[in-house]
Length: 452
Image (cartoon, rainbow, N blue to C red; front, side, top):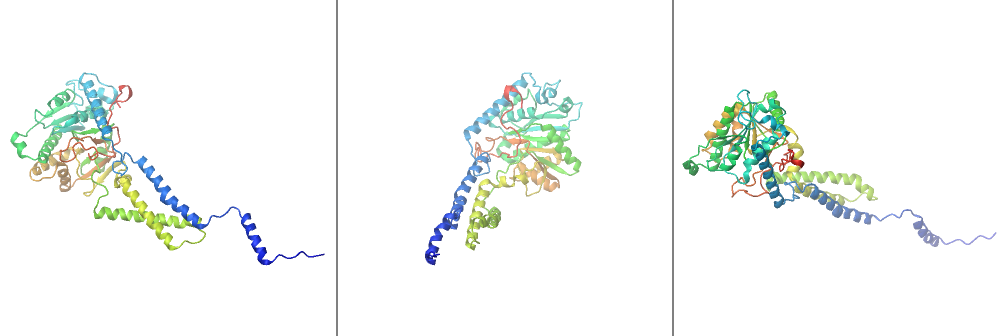
C-alpha cells in the first residue's frame, strides 16, 4: 500500500494556525482593548451618572453645589404662608374655633383669648413670643398663627397647662395695627422702656439683650415650670406641646443642670471653607476614599480584566484618579450633608462649647435659671458688642450649666427680611434656616380648609 506524501512541517504549522483561530470560542479581546474600555467607563460613564444622581437628589439641599434655588418660588411660598396665617387669625378673631388641633379646648371662657392665663391652674409651659423690633412681611402674625395651630393640646386639661403671650417692647407706633389685631386672639404684654434718647445711644445688639432680659423676667413671673422663648420671625412644627414636654421631662429625669435647649439651629456658616482645618479634613477624607477604592479595584476589578499582574504605574494612576474623584464628590455634596447622620440624629444632644453656638431663634428654658440669665444679659448688654444669643452661650459656660439641642428642630426661621440691610436682608440664599426642621413651613391648611 502506497503511503501518502507527508506535508512539510513548516507548511503544516501555517495551515493549523487559522484552523485553531477559527475553532477558538469566544474570540478573546486583546488586553489593550479592555484597558481602553475600562478607562472610558471610569472617566466618562461613572462620573456622568454620579453627577446626574447627585444633581437630582441634592437639588433642595442648600449646602451642596447642586442646590437649585428659585427666588420667585420662595417669594411665592412666603406669600402663601402669610395668607394661611392671616386666614387662621381672622377665623379665630371672628369667634369660630376649628375643632382640629385642640383649639376648641384652648379658648378662655373669661377673656376669649387662646392659651390665656388661668389662675386656678399652675401652668406647666409658657410660650413667649418676643417682639422687639419692627418686622416686615408680618412675621409676628405668622409666628403666632403657627403656634396656635401646632401647640396641639389633647384635651382641656392639657390646654390649661399652656400659656401663650406676646411680650412686646415695640414703641406704640411700631406694628400697632398688627399687634391690635393679634390682641384679639392672644394676650399681648407691652413693656417698652426705650426712650428716644436711649434709641439714639443704645446699639441694636444692646437693646435686643435688654429686651430679651425683660422677656425672661416676665416668663419667670408667670410661674411656668418651663418657658419657650421664641423670636417673632420663627414658626413652629406640629405636636409642639407633646414634643417639648417629653424633652423637658427627659432632662429633668437625668437630673442634669441644663440652661436651655436649642429648638432651632442652622449650619449657615459651617461648611467647606478655605482654612487649614477644612482643607486638611477634606484632603484626608479624599485620600482615604481614594485608597479604599484603589485597593478594591486592585483586588477585584483588575484581576478580572487583565491576564497578568498590572504594572505599578496602573495602581498609581488609579489612586490619583479615585482620590480626585472622591474629593470632588465630598466637596460638592457639602460638609453638612456628610456629617448630618452624626450631628442630626433624632433626640436630645448635649452640645460642647465648640458645637452649636449662638442662634437664639427658639429656646426651651427651665424656670429656675431665667432670673440668672436675665441678670447676666442686663449686666453685659451695654458693656460689649456681642449679640444676645452669643451672650446666652457665654452665660452657660460661666454658670456651669449645659446646652442641648433637640433634633429634629421644632422651629424654623422665616425672617428673610428681618436682619439688617447691610447683612443679608432679603437674601433667600443666605438667610439662616434649618435643614432638620421636620414639618411644612409654608401651609397651615390642607385640602378642604382643614388645619394640617
